[in-house]
Amino acid sequence: MFKFLKDKLKQVVSRFSQQVKEEEAAQVSPPVPVSPPAPGPEAGLEEQKRAEPAQVPAPQAPAPLPEQPLKPVQKPAPKPAPRAIPPKQPSSLPYRTPALAPQPALQPPAQPQKEQPAQKKGIFQKITERFTKTIISSQKFDELFTELEIALLEGNVAIEVIEKIRDDLKREIVDTPFSRGRVEDIITQNLKKSISGLFIAPGVDLLARISGKKPFVICFVGVNGSGKTTALAKLGRLLQEQGKTAVFAAADTFRAASIEQLQEHAAVLGIKVIRHDYGSDPAAVAFDAISYARAKGIDAVLIDTAGRLHSNTNLIDEMKKIIRVAKPDLTLFVGESITGNDCVEQARQFSEAIPIDGIILTKADIDEKGGAAVSVSYVTKKPILYLGTGQGYSDLQEFRPEMVIESLGLS
Ligand code: GDP
Image (cartoon, rainbow, N blue to C red; front, side, top):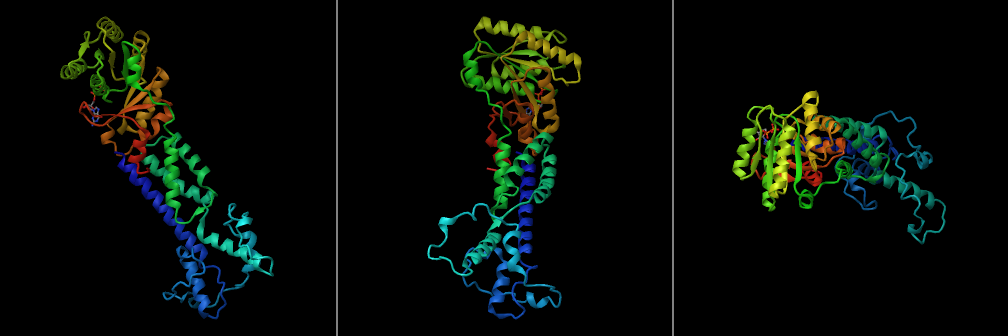
């Protein structure tokens, strides 16, 4: 599930962190030829440190220095004014660290005030930070996000969701110093935090609600072929497993064979179907099913409706009438996860036409991208209640945001 997006995110984040590492290494080594031309043992060591930032943490350690002391020699003549570092360093280093500078209590105690020590310390700290901290500028972040944005778009994530992720990451990452070597981790953790925040709508404890009202009426709406009938049958089975009784209302009187399809499921599950003829008023079917449930003391009425596009005014009006007559306790939009942005757009349009309480995303088992699951709740402000994960009756998983986080490799 969601493998495509998972792989893409991983690639982009790793590539970026690699790029940051390389740039840091480049920034630190070539341009500042601190050591004078005369080689000497110290010079080799300095070069080594700059070229190998990871080795710095123990600043005073001798460090083996065999490999390539050749660099200074290779540069023949340029160098206009090489040894001008000391005066400029204090204020011009881009790597200021807000946290480290004001730490008076931690200074080594027995260092009163000698000539240079204080100054030397400042420089030393800054150099150390330069080796140990990463700061991502706004410009660098934009570079990262361009790639991330493409990955998210390819993964069918909705534009407004991408914008939210961008704002979240930018706020957390830009100009915030963090330990070197942690770029990938920091970005991943912030992505996780941002995506977790997309599932803002509270879930619905369906079973508790069904226990609270009899009959509890659930209406399933969505476009054709999205998996409404299958989801309805799965939910009927789930209710049975919880000791609840249900009746199905065959309120899709529009599409040929829809009633028979529902009846087939009902026969397997041993659930009663209330049906009228094709072409009859679906609201009347729903009404009859509710009356039947009331009369028989049945816990839940599950209403199957015809698939429709928001642009089909007649069918949308018909759906509004079903809602008016049946007054469902819960109206669920059923959308195909694999259709990505289309699914999100449909959910938005349905929820503008009628009050939607929650979403079932079907075919999550064959969705490699995952954009709909990431986006739909944020866009509609409605919770995803279940994921359809196959064609069997038990292939219905209660939705948890952590599933998405895990499937995207962000946990
Ligand atoms: P409806 O027109 O909205 O009622 O859609 P159906 O319930 O008839 O489903 C359309 C097709 O999608 C059927 O072949 C179902 O078996 C299939 N389907 C429904 N839910 C899922 C699911 O979660 N995973 C997979 N792989 N197929 C599903």
